[in-house]
Amino acid sequence: MATITKINEKFDRLLAEGEKIQRTAGWNGRQYNRSPDDVDYRRFRTEALNLIRIVCGAHSDHYKELSRIAEGKDTAANSYFFKDCYGIRQAAKRDFDDGLLFDLRAVVAAEVLGDFIDQADALLAAGYHIPATSLAGAILEDAMRKLCASRALPVPDKTSIDALNAELGRAGAYDKLVHKRITALAELRNNADHGHFDDVSKEDAKDLVGYVRRFCADYLVRA
Image 1 (spheres, helix red, strand yellow):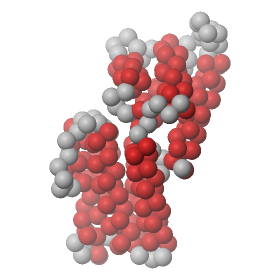
Image 2 (cartoon, helix red, strand yellow; image 1 turned 90 degrees about the horizontal axis):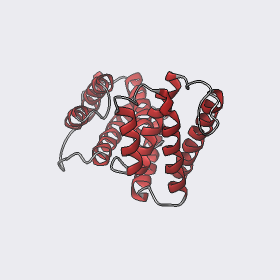
Image 3 (tube, one colour; image 1 turned 45 degrees about the vertical axis):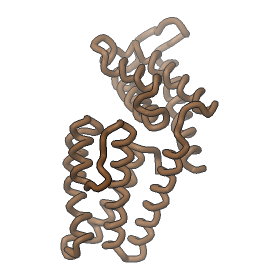
Image 4 (cartoon, one colour; image 1 turned 30 degrees about the vertical axis):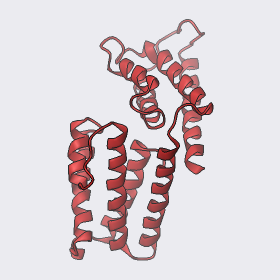
C-alpha cells in the first residue's frame, strides 16, 4: 500500500536526520559535546509530533510523551531534550514496524483521499476546473472530518468546511493563517457548488487542489 510505504519513508527520513543532528552535536550516548541547534530541535520535534499523531493517534503514549516535552516549561526551548524526542521517535518506529500502532482503516482512508486528489488533478488537466473545484472542496471537508476524529472532536453528520474550520481552530489543530486560508477556500468551493462559476477561475481551482494535497500531507498522511 503506497501510504504505508510513505509512512515508512517519513520515519526513515526523520531517523536519518536525527542521527545527523546528534552526530553534529557530538552525542556519545551519554552527553553532547555541544547542544543541538535550537532550530533543528524545534523542526525535528514538530515533524515527529505530526507524524506520531497521524500514525499512533493523539491519545497514544508516544504522542503524549512527546507533547509533554514540546509543551514543558523546562523542555520546550531546551535542545538538550533532542535525545528524548529522538528516542520516542525510535520507539514509535519500532512499534509501527511490529504492527502495534496504526489504524489500518485510517491509512486506507488516506489512500482513498489521495486517489480523489489525483482525480481532481485529472479534471484540471482536462479543462474541467469547476468540477475539480467541487471535488477538491469535498476532499478538504472529508480530510477535516478525519482530523476532527483523530483529535476526538465532536462532528455532526451534516456540517460544512466553515463549521469544521471553527472547531479545529478552537482546538488548536493549526494556526490562524491556515484557518484564514481555509475560510477563503470554503467560499471558493461554495461558488463552484452553487453555480457562481464566474467567481471560480482556473487558477483558483489549481490553487485549491494543490492546497488540499498539502493539507492532507501536513495533517493526515501523505497523499
